[in-house]
Image (cartoon, rainbow, N blue to C red; front, top):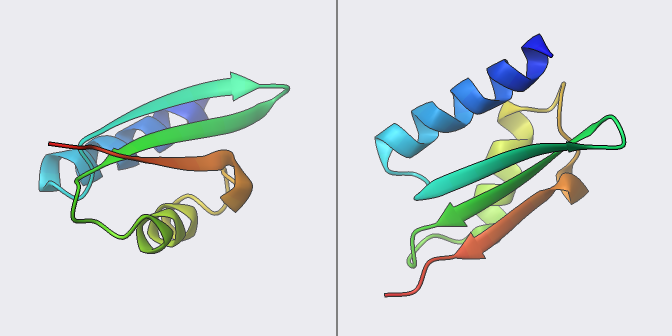
Length: 71
């Protein structure tokens, strides 16, 4: 499960930089699901592609869900 810690660590860095508001990582059927809460002004398709590129060895694009935070 070291890869799970790597995914959470990378997302924590993104959260610390303000790129994402929050995240949740879970394992379902031996696959990692990532749910990201994005700031209201962030393009969710762009953010999904950035997260997928960053975590490409661990997470497939359809497993990344972006939720817009509303004010």
